[in-house]
Length: 101
Image (cartoon, rainbow, N blue to C red; front, side, top):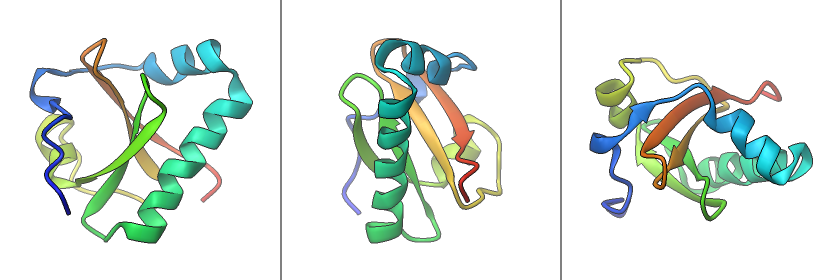
């Protein structure tokens, strides 16, 4: 996997509002499509040690090592369907789980 140095988690704060703000900005349907695309990337190219990331500003996706979650959030167990929402503009991250799984 390529180094995701453009995702600077060291300066990020934990948030509980990124998901709801994202829905308010683009709508629930488009937000769910963006989540589905991030989870599809995990299915197609990820491993058991990666976690999909949804980048809010671009609706882009990436994969990061799950060690990032342990370092910045403290969770050591990542379930299927989990993804990290990342906002570079707000310097924030939020971990969510898609209930579809």
